[in-house]
Image (tube, rainbow, N blue to C red):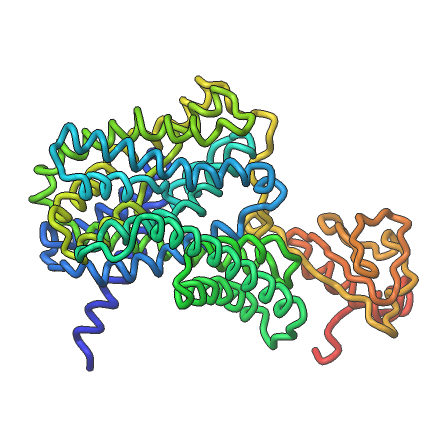
Length: 500
């Protein structure tokens, strides 16, 4: 018997199920789900169930693990066709924009709150990164031009890399060992090598997964996510940016024609949800509620400086070389959502015992809660007011099993092997029941929508959509034709199982 483990599993499962249920609840109310997860963490902490947790180093490590999964999912679901036109803008926001934001916030915090320069710049650095989880979860529910969505998502996936490097540099408590130009060179090295490592891991994953004949389809999603984690680890071992490596590898894998691609995306989506839930609950557990009220003034001052000065200026400077209209710039400024990433980054100086790090963590926690409600809840009205909505644009289309389940339909795949009597049969001669239809034929590596007079050939693969009520009948008819051809019923063949 392991009562401690049993109790931990009971509590963990209960929190997970409540968090999953809260997603639907928060969506109906228009409240970001991350706030619900943070509240769950606070509720089971010292102020609620009395669980004491103050290990900032463990939180930082687990937070980094969660961010790897979240960023990997963002890369896997990013479409290169929409990402490529905004890559320059996203790169500028993730580098130049980050530097502008750090300097502006640091200056305001230094002047208004009287903090020393290093701590003031730490405030700016920790808050300069937009949050991938918050951006992905919020923007994909809105009807926006693909260019805006892609720019914000790419920025949130790419800006973690330089920000982590800068926060680590500013959190060093010992004497400065290198001149400033060496630190600049170090940042460039980490970003360049990180991108190269991600490129190598992504290409290796594409090559391996396309040619691997794994014994189970469930192994492909695990292998795909494994390559993104490999990219992070290889980058970290080489003292490069592992987060940038993860995103680059994810984009390469997500845009490749991999076997069981939809299963890979579904698995990554589920892992990302689990990582978000665990991360936010853990951060809520680390917070000390009775101390948060003292951080209200620093949080509001820093948040207003970020929202009204730093973010608009960073967008303006970053967008100068690109054709970005004023309305789009204003929306990009307002949609720079903060979430778990700044709180995780705040654990770096906290674990390094930087003077003032406790107040920094509390201020960031309060700021994220307040400004997430303020921004996320007003994104849709802001988009309409700025006229950057795209009513003619279709919502993101993702083929998965859930929509088929809601439509009470099944997707069947049928091969035409050598010797099958299906070869030579026209599609209309299959005589499928009403409610079943051949939607796609793959022949010699080329897919096309068949007509009634399309003649099937050996080696063809077919996708057939059938409503749940006629699936069994459709399967029986297909088996019958594969055995006796188009005249199956004439020969008394009804497709029943021969062993039955």
